[in-house]
Every structure is written in structure tokens, then in C-alpha cells.
Length: 117
Image: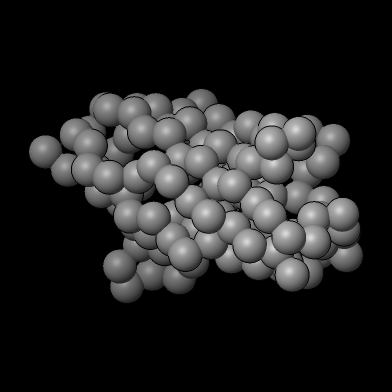
């Protein structure tokens, strides 16, 4: 079992920056990828960014050029640097871990990001 604990998030003005971090613990030997989903009010959860154990990344088109995902395998953590934030980036951001077979291994508790003036 994998436990994921997020930190960061909060309220920021449009154009501002935030950094989310996620620390993993538990049975990590079979974890391949980690990343972030987000869920805006009234919308489905969507993939924001994903990084695998080799460092290959996937970013949603809506955040390319603004968000960067990074991973520290030694520290068992993943971070999401979010720049040039927009109101449409508002939502609850969830960290996740993914097994090599593509199944989700676990979710964080979620952290609120609000972009508003």
C-alpha cells in the first residue's frame, strides 16, 4: 500500500505561482509513475501532469509552458511548479502513484488551489 501526503496550495492572484509537493511512503518498489490530477467544481477529475521513473513527463495541453513536474526518487517525492496561474487552474489537486501496469496505487488527500483576484 502507498501513502501520499501533499503540501502546498492556497490562494494566489492570476499570474502568480505556487508549488505543490507530494511525499510517498509505503510499498514503493512497484511504483512507476507519479503525478497530479485536479478537479474543478462541477467538473470531472483531469490529469494535469505525470512523470515516470525514468523522468519522462506528460502534461495537459492547458498547462504546457506554465507547469513543470519533477521527481526526487531518493526523497520519494514529486513536485508541481505552477507559474502564470489562471482562474481556470482553480480546483483540488490530487497526487497519485501508478503501478507499472498502469493501475493507480494510491491518492493523496487533495490540496485546494484557488486563483482569484
